[in-house]
Image (tube, rainbow, N blue to C red; front, side, top):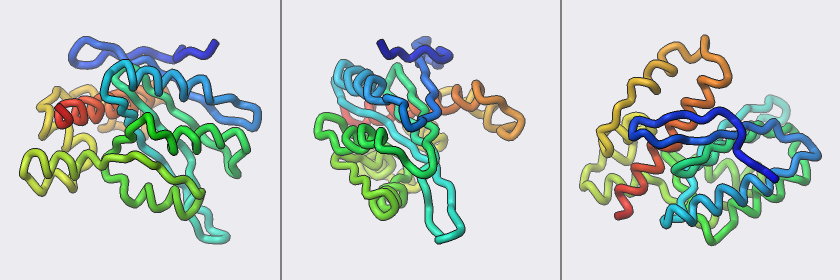
Length: 198
């Protein structure tokens, strides 16, 4: 049975985020992990999955290629390192993105959504740009243009010292600390979304 058996990180409110990192190969079945994320998002009553993507550029022909995906709920964080070229097993990820039962929430994601559609044919059906929501809800246009850290600080007033510590020496950090940063960022945006959607 699939489980999030990676490092567990304590958040500033005393809760924990359990992680799982997967280097996706041609025979890797990611569907059980996506199911656990969907179940966790539903049990948290707001059906939100925080998502973030990373891109690599290919020179010939010049185009962007999806290199990794981070998916988070309040208590889970899944990091998928993707192969290039993609394998058929990523159809599970495409179906997950197309789910009407999950709201995908992200920060500064408009360009990512366009690149996903143009380069990979991936369409995310139910998506919220949390910065735009924060700007509308709080009546402060600036919030729409902030990144993850700044938006979380303005909306939550959370202690970001651990994230700052990791990011200050990013190039020197090992994989586990980078995974912790991913978990913190996902948890922060989940809480921003949770607060704004009340």
